[in-house]
Image (cartoon, one colour):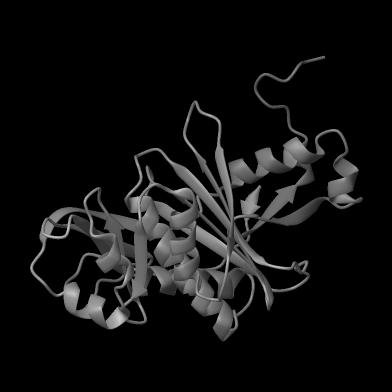
Length: 279
């Protein structure tokens, strides 16, 4: 099984000497002891550029509205993951009821990766927008949440999710087109002040001297591979290969997480695997 080849972009360094390469974002966490608040921020310009490059090569140019949803979604998902314990896998499906759109995001707090896709065609309409969240860790059953959300702002969707499903208050702000801030309330945070913050307040607030407590680099990456995709299609079509190949010697399949295209060869699909029974 081989990947449908498209040239990958060469890694870059920013003119300022920042270590982020294309596809990466450095998430920095600060503690505001005065307000008992965690401030989490990152510039996602390079990570989002990698998403755009990826979707243009494997699918098609997303429209302007889709780009806004994905930029906000990838930013909020990364900030959320950076505050979670190591080893968590989180998947989000956000259904926007009008215009009917599905935003799929997923990330891994151990590998520090995030990816996503957006669907605008053949999306079943519903009466309201919803966010579906599944969180899993090795050796445990996945935890699932479903919350109703309102509006068209993905950052507000995340705030509504935190309000309805998490025990910790959180606010999300886009302070430039590429930089996002997450404010995570701690036990003695003044909730009245916290909930009343507006974007202009946050623009001034984040420029205050704060204590840097951690930083980590996330990257746009799915984690799909030829081996993983072969395992997936074998699991689905092992007993009925003709449903997959329909008389052909191979077939192209798409990764459901990121849309990357892979070629499945019939001969490789039918090769014996370790542990298969031998006649």
